[in-house]
Length: 113
Image (cartoon, rainbow, N blue to C red; front, side, top):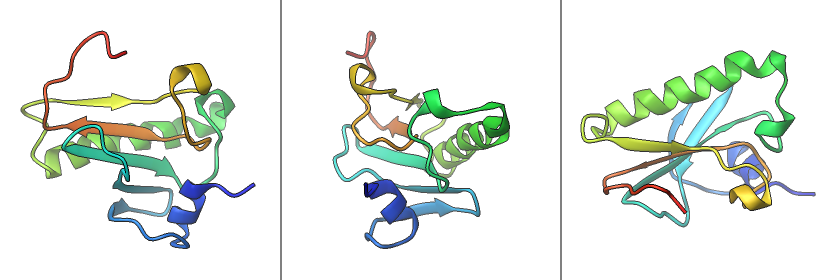
C-alpha cells in the first residue's frame, strides 16, 4: 500500500519542504488548519505512535526538538504554537505514517475537538 508521506519523503510527490535531515523531513500541510501548519515526519515509515519501540526514542525526541527549532525559525515560538500527534481513527489520524503537526499564527482553543 502506498504511503503519501513516504512518497513526499522520497520526492516522488512534490511538497514545500521546510526542513530535512537524514532522519526527518518537514513540509507544509496540503490542507492547513492554521496559518502556519507544518508536518514533521520520520523518513522511516512508522504507522503511528502505537508502533514505536524503545529503539525509536531518539527519533521521537528529535521530531519534537526539530519542531521547536522550526517554531523559532518561523518566529512563532514567542506568540505560541501547538504540537499535535494524532493516533489512529478516533484520534484523528488520517495518514498512517507517524507525523507531528506544528500549528501556529492563530489562537488555539481548548479542548481541541
